[in-house]
Image (cartoon, rainbow, N blue to C red; front, side, top):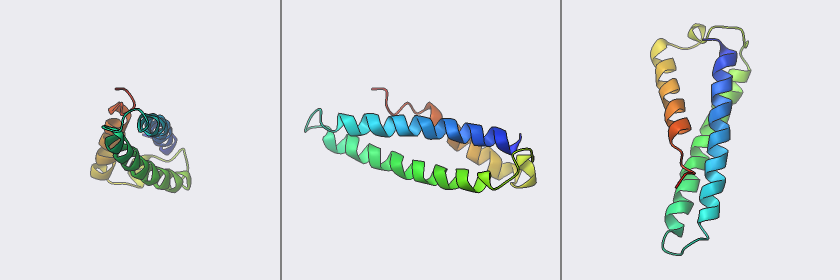
Length: 95
């Protein structure tokens, strides 16, 4: 996998997280019974987004045509890809 391809996956995940954060923030005002849960979820998603933004900044410093395996171990890459998949497929904004 090339660094540029990984950046595209990170960008897609970042976009999904931004949508989920906004959706959860909007749901805070729906009911006083569930507002805390939605506010808490929005904060958790924001932390994940901040971490992904840092990872993207680090990846952007690398040559997009380099193989990711040149910079990261196979174990690190597999774990990061699993995390991206979980965050993309969480559908935190779909209730």
